[in-house]
Length: 390
Image (cartoon, helix red, strand yellow):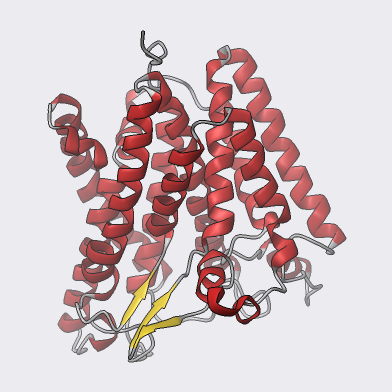
């Protein structure tokens, strides 16, 4: 006897949504590397619509990506036994953490190997979340989903707790929730930019939500739409009440547009309850309308959504490398692109305006789409199991 359930077909809707947020994420990273120094896009009192929007729309990327990672883990149960899924999740989690601290750190963000400063970001958070999930497979799916939902709902109650209150375990609370750099050894710092606790909650909630994909298409779409709408309305209500769910309260500004900016500016690091509601709510509404099989027009995004890690690992050094060449070509020494963040300020005369950022992003995506299509085909036809880790 085997505990492997019947095999199900992969839905384009999940890959399409994932591919869409990956493409939007690349826009944000293009802005990081190429945008001329500007005010904080999310500063309601000192931004403008185009600048605010290019940053705000990218807020959807990380929570949707992490949530869908949980959904995908649940759907793997149709192709793997529990033992195989346990083995895959914890080994993939370790692999993701390794990639975050090596390839992504050295060749993606920093272009150096001195390890004076390292960062734990979204791939790091997914890695640890998968390791934890691998040990929770023995519990009913709904229990895991409820546990993730409770973390999302309640973790803001711990906002006032600081790492120093935990004595010898101060470092653990830094990693879980209290987002501050910490000195690992003399002169070497690690910054847990993505504190693990709320991201673990999002991935576990996604795993629980994966149960919905065992329903009929009509029931799944109806539930997904209602849930997404409920989360969105919940965000509006809680944000309007302005009493819980985010460390930053929205404030009335000089005009209605800036007040709207303040209303929508929720805390991402760590992701607050309101941030999660604001992003996952509309994303689920969109998911309820996406087709299970897409037309050729949307195939590139579906393909991208099927190889998200490959896309992530390649697009960062691509954008970063082109940014260095762009800086050199314009007479800059590019020191701020080759060292620790903050050590060298970005020259005020460097960079592109928003139209230029969009142009570079479109060129980069035009390069990445066929590359991802090639890898997706290679991954689909190859018998080499290690490709499943990419």
